[in-house]
Length: 343
Image (cartoon, rainbow, N blue to C red; front, top):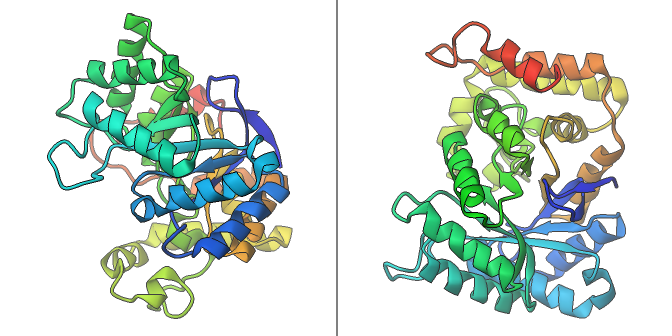
């Protein structure tokens, strides 16, 4: 495992983060504990959860694991999130001081800790003044409840506005952004990635394998069956599967990943993860796993360095299709390449 700093903070984290959305739902407590233990045994130090994952069960499972693994727990950097509904009332969601105060305290109780290393806003809230949200986060840092904070699923202008409001008031500034990002979903490169680079924020990509597409699970025009999330529940997400299956770009990307993987003699998932981990601003790639075998397979990407030719093959095959103004303007992709050092 390799390590880096968490965005622009001084906290060191592993370059692969364990995502725990499956804990308490697709992985029971025993399986979740085995996944956590395996991750730590392989050098992982960064764990990500949220108050709404399995209705709080994910945090509870992590909390019980932390309590029973005191030595290992001291090395873990724990991140959670708040924003979405945790009750039926009108104040049981959003980024207001009222809701975030209750949500953070509830997360701390479930995790069995007095503070978390990274507290993330799960999404933007158009109804709450950003000053109210950021002042709460600054107070939470001052109170020792959180060490740092970050965002998730923010647009470029939302990220930039929050950064500048925090700085203008002298409040603690964000350190990370958690977006969806993978070889099939690169649209954040138009504004979100440059905004993160400008602000010095580290990216924590979720869905790095594109829902399994980049692992080679699916075959063109063949509906998924068996041991995949779509195959086990054919009604789940089939419209999205059909749309992605119909795109020629999807299969160009999958073929490129398979070509590089075959040349290296490694699983396709490791190639996709290695490409993403080397992207500009990426701090730690979030790995979701339902089994220990899935986790071990993906952790192999930590030791995989792609060549310039391999990286170019994947990057060129996955260039986002953008025709409309302003992103379709000539020179946009070239400017991004210059900003990010040609990667």
